[in-house]
Length: 160
Image (tube, rainbow, N blue to C red; front, side):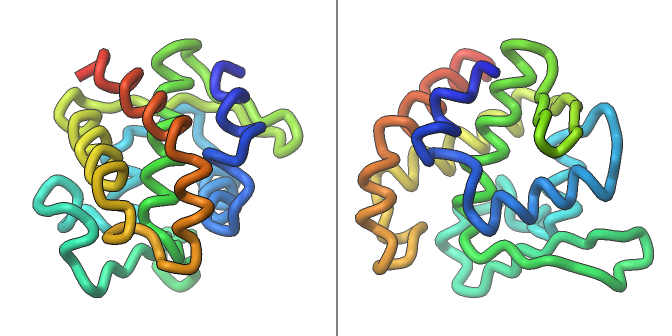
């Protein structure tokens, strides 16, 4: 896959938050997702595009895993979700499909230019002031991911 260069270097995928996202896709079991739908299902649609995520001291990023809203999984670091969604969207934009053979998943993610711009703005904000987006104890990890996040951000910019 196009995004393997980032997946294999720990930029996206592999975290507990990434596994929540994989579980979400597995449970929804669809061929096509709109970014706006994923954001809504993650319970951050009121924040997305309204103000930077770091400005909310109580970001409650919670995926409802069923239609009845009786089962959920929390995302610990909302920026991790933004990075993963950015990479998955980029994969869809470049190759048309995201395939996780190990998980038996194949789907695409679509987005309006406005929503792509919001992802880019969040990534740029994190690159500028990572301490506002990432917990202090993980800032060293963020520093290692900086170049990959910059690449994802720059490539997404070409689609806004």
